[in-house]
Image (cartoon, rainbow, N blue to C red; front, side, top):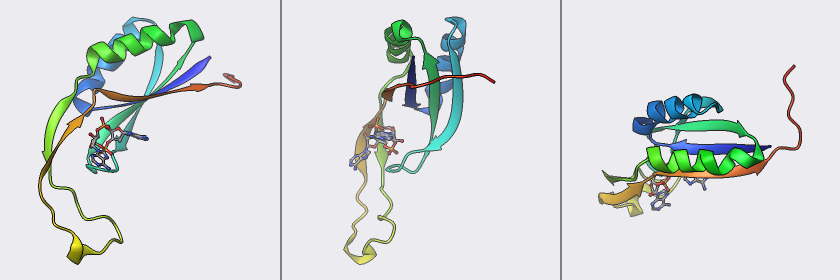
Amino acid sequence: MKMIIAVVQDKDAAKLMERLVASGQRATKLASTGGFLREGNTTFLIGSADEEVETVLRTIREVCHAREQLVTPLSPVGGPSDAYVPYPVEVTVGGATVFVLNIERFEKV
Ligand code: 2BA
């Protein structure tokens, strides 16, 4: 069994959950915040059988789109604010940041 942790944009979250549930996957959706943009995003926890991991990854690729975003980064917390010039920068966010972890033990009690 694997745990797939996927950080996706909020705009893609509802559709991704719909597709996962429709394909028989179990998933938990958590509200999260990106460290760079400091904006909301959504983190999925998806416990999957080994042989279903590629199907889940394909679904994530189909649903989650990369988007350009113009941002003015905040100064680093605790950093020297006088040396920080907040020029807007364009970043490509997504489609999704995905981690696949081995599960040592799974139980439902
Ligand atoms: P954020 O940290 O808010 O990052 C949003 C986007 O900003 C990133 O998109 C990337 O394009 C850019 N970015 C992040 N850090 C940067 C930096 N130091 N310099 C320049 N640009 C930077 P994604 O890479 O698609 O990441 C989307 C979200 O996925 C991230 O939101 C974060 O919540 C999560 N994430 C990405 N990589 C991660 C990692 N290694 N561990 C944990 N979470 C991660």
